[in-house]
Length: 269
Image 1: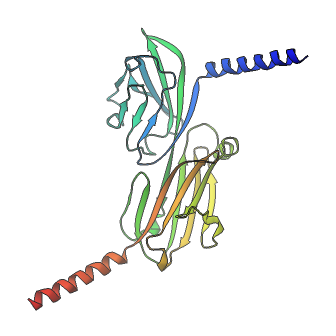
Image 2: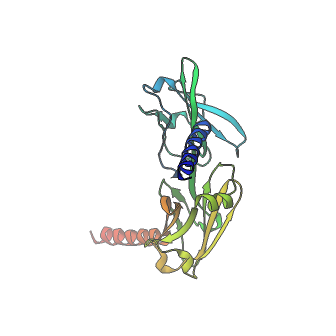
Image 3: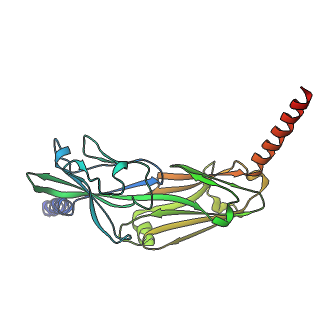
């Protein structure tokens, strides 16, 4: 009886391996907007550069699949060709990732003598991005791969929206429950801001976005404070975006002091 069970288990393992081979290799990569990312080609052949084609698709944008790399060479007709490069191991590099152009499904395909070899290696690229409510900003704002700063003032309400852009075909709720994806707002010490009544934290979702918003009224002591939107996948930190509070009044105060000091020096000379 035990031998039969062992044979059944072995059969299930072999069947699982065959099904994985048929469906192809799938990977998930998480990056914050503005960052650089490397997508691995898990089905690469030896001397793969001349044999590799990378294909991009995005169901949310309803655009046809686009060949970014064909036979190891970049397709210059694509919008993002200047930000792409192909590594010696046939992985795809993307610089300055944007939510407008880059999140979605990437498929690495191998050809030999014009014949497709094996299944595609699929990589889902998920992009994390933070935006500030327009009414919260009193002057200019800037963002980078890991942080953003907006000049605002104490006493004002600020709302930060952290969005994870994905194109898996599943709703955010389904994905969270099956894959253990979680978005959190934390302070510099890594403490969940849900534990502080000062902050209103709300989660929402649709088919292509997981969203978590933070709303609070700024205090004087918030100047130079840092809040982070953190993304974890199966309890492992994948990426985060920092938001640093910078009060615009500091620039004005500095400028006034500089003018007064310069004027006093000018008339004293």
